[in-house]
Length: 500
Ligand code: MSP
Image (cartoon, rainbow, N blue to C red):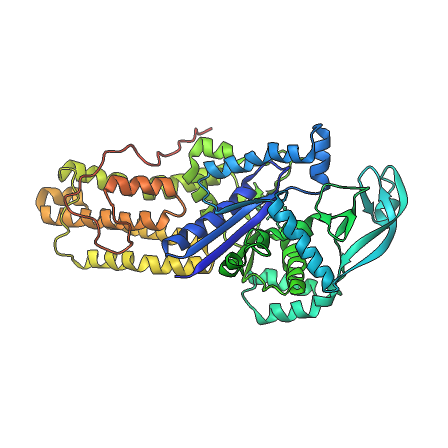
């Protein structure tokens, strides 16, 4: 038994959650559930990123204080996670006291280590945009209210740790994954690394955590947000807890926030003398019909709409089944329906319908006796017993998509076995063989359902309930002959698409 600490990015409270957010959170949930079934102690952390200029402006537009604005919006995420059956262990919000005081502690420590200095920056500042713009942007003439501004700020000596970081990445092949993202970061680190501006003067933007050694400034939002991974784990507040969980086993992130995690965060940890997370895993993006998802294109997919049409488990299944971790994936309604009809309705759902239909028709609705196995059953049994080990190996490698397809391959073997053995025919000529085949198919289905439970908690619980399978050990032979099968409607009725 070991521990597994998994994190998602903390999401900007302003955006309505879309399938990108749902994906990472479901992924963390699925990994957590697999680890829990292995008996590991799991800490699954997610939350919200609530500071910064965008939140402040959005609040102003609504005539609310930033805190009231965040409090009003945070339930959108909490409710979605509830609907999606996400079993997180902690939900952190960066506006919570427990987080703010740790950010200040981190700033103080980094400062005490001599890794923070002040500098003046002079540049073109757009009042309308509330940010410094580049010379090229200035020359484009597209910005209003531009003035030359000189501003003092605090900087973190990130450059000091550049070589240490390169050496660390080289020495720890599993630190940044997948491989091509590691190479991307090493490429980025071939250029000289600058220092990081980590403050914002309150006079310009005050929605943030105060810098403890200069109350005229607040902390830059990333320096604040990244700290959530340790503030929630007890750093600086609960040493036994922190010792138990840190380092995180995996930070799951999207590819766009690779640099902030692999460079900003890791150099911050170097400065603090805190060990780095074991793995930072960057997944690709969900594209919508091959196009980037964006508000302006109006193609943002709301997970709630999908759940309403197809059910929670089908959405969880589709997202895990379709994206190869590390690569982009393409969402289209067609691919969703195809995945649903083929994997869930035709393969998984159909196996249950056939098994339970035949047991009700020919065997008094009771799990039959297995009898003496022939090589065909031995083969299925061997596959069933090998499946859990295979899935564990894939999950440890973050190959969730392959894990799901491996279970589906087993389900297809079971369907094929049923077709070849044809227990509906055997029932007329050789009842013992009919019993043996249906026991084997039902027991195989039990194991498949257990192995898919982390992905589809509700539907697989329904399958186990129908089979009367109180034993959820994925070891062959646990179904008890004589158990009465429950009647049930089809689990995944095919989605019929009107042909145009
Ligand atoms: N608040 C920061 C993260 C701070 S972590 C210390 C942030 N928030 S976000 O809400 O903008 O994005 C959160 C995550 O959503 C990122 O990992 C990002 O990659 C992911 N996604 C945004 N669009 C996505 C897709 N279209 N597909 C998959 N994930 C996507 O960044």
